[in-house]
Image (cartoon, rainbow, N blue to C red; front, side, top):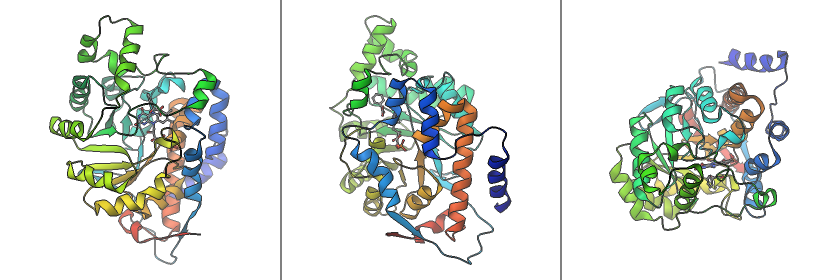
Length: 378
Ligand SMILES: Cc1cc2nc3c(=O)[nH]c(=O)nc-3n(C[C@H](O)[C@H](O)[C@H](O)COP(=O)(O)O)c2cc1C
Ligand SMILES: O=C(O)C(=O)c1ccccc1
């Protein structure tokens, strides 16, 4: 493993073409490739972007207190989620409307992730349908559900995901309506209205049957009518749980009491997330919420996290505070914008290698030992 790290560093140093390494450079690279509206959509947070900033700041306020001389030659970064072993403690967060960044969108991302057996969580508002993504990439795949007001559409999508080989369902619970996105108002930009997020709807027989007419405008209006679903509550969660045999996770949990309710409702896993600061501004950072959620579920279900993960040392901090795995968001989207599938591969390779170096230099050689690593606020 130590040689692999050296290889990765030398590969980057010896490469003919420079590919952005840091998050800041990736963001700059994406800004140059994308329209102002699309870039602003990806980059921005809700409201005054307090939470967007806080997500990263909170990671910086945490410090690892590493151990030395502990023989980390046999590093094992594998994790077990719902009975399946994955080689890295990483997943790709659901990001909708990826055609904003690259024509191949979800196909390119899923192919890049499959190279490393990193699970992708395909968004309900993906740019390619779940069946197209499954046909293009053989790696592990989960499906993210945005509830539809017409709940038969939700159940239909979940059934399709099961049939297409997706291995878990992630119900996002922090987006019953869109957050207050000032950047998009400024840019007058709506990727949903541009049709970037319609693939899973225009291929859904139940959704199509519910429409009066099936032209593009009616499809988009149908999506808008379904995606704003403020009535979502625990009864829907219980019903959804009955309708699927796949593990069901809730994404967007921040309060320990909601975590407990989720477990009481038979939920199989949680994703602590504030949606990358894109929903309610002013909320607690995901990494600050994590230890409280972990404590409240007391090991009964795996707790994953996203929002603000930018590098390998962030992964170490999250796993040390009890996360079972982390989801990468904006960094892979910027990789996609900068270099398509190859760009996503570069971002993932660097993430994987920096994570390995960071775990090893913390003095730990197995993910299961990370919770005993000391983290302080200093
Ligand atoms: C452009 C964009 C689109 C997103 N679309 C979805 C989505 O369709 N479903 C979902 O559950 N989360 C969505 N998210 C949220 C991500 O899954 C994740 O929570 C967030 O990006 C994590 O924050 P980070 O990017 O700062 O790491 C989206 C995020 C971005 C940036
Ligand atoms: O932009 C988002 O963060 C997002 O998840 C979304 C996707 C589609 C509609 C509304 C919000």
